[in-house]
Amino acid sequence: MPRSPAYASHVPPPGPTTTVWVGPRARFPRRPRLSSRARWRIVRAVGMFDTIHVDPPLICPACGTETRQFQTKEFGSSLAHFKLHEMSGFGGAIKNVGMGAASRRGKMAQHCDVAPSVKPKLCVGCGACLEACAHGAIELIDREVKTAPAANPGKKAVPKKLARTNPERCVGCGACIHTCPNGAIQIDWGKDLPPFMERMVEYTVGALKGKEDHSLFLNFLMNISPACDCYPNSDAAIVPDIGILAATDPVAIDQASMDLLNAQAGLPSSCLKPEACGSGNDKVRAVYPHIQWEHQMEYAEKVGLGSRSYNLVRIK
Image 1 (cartoon, rainbow, N blue to C red):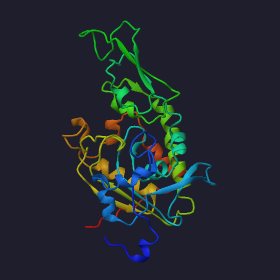
Image 2: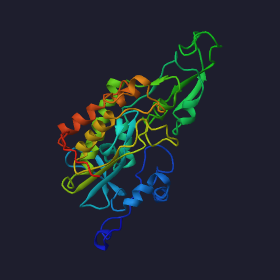
Image 3: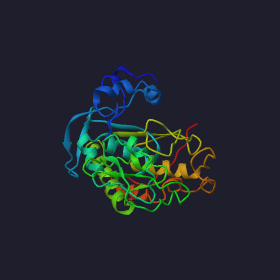
Image 4: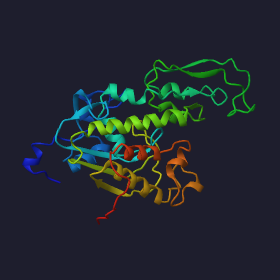
């Protein structure tokens, strides 16, 4: 889709935002190279939206949160790969803007109250979480408990090692939660996640301040994976590709995305259990039973970010 010269002069080329975890997207200089890889080819094909942000961090006068100003000050836009997420339930326009437009310090602030801990009776000391943690916040220690873990009920030797988290180094990214094959690393789902979702919404408010009537959001409901795109690998899609949604309201587009997702029948090749594959079933709760994903939407509507009501217009 070619851009007109007038439009191209105001809108910079698209590219991925930074992340809180250590990796190629952690710092700005390496991000333009990533945008040429497969996942961002569709973004370059559209070629007319701004997802690059610049320093310095700004304080939003509306909510007091620290954000990074969009490079195109008078116009905000988001291109989001819609997927499930192990902490917010799903990631769409709100998460893409709230987390993506925050400075690294802002990203850390959003995750600050998420504190994973290890359940000794479930841990088998495999070390998978140790490899997944990019912040050195997990170590394997000698196990003192003499009873076998529940995941290893006396049929094998009792594991000699036990994973232990270091709260001082943990950034709350949740990679260890998703990686553990036995569900041994958990958080207080009811206590930790609602504040995380609320801060994410507040950062979205801050990022869009002054651009509320001049922003566009696109959610790509394709290859909807069961976990965050932060991981170096992607599990099988949980439903067939749905399409691309566009809206000027980040709350409406995320609500519509969730409704369309749940209306689909799940793919038998995915991580969904057969009983959760039916059309109309809550796909987020099928994968993450403890996550109240609706809280993100309810709080966003409460603070005036947008409306959960929408009119879906299908374009062939």
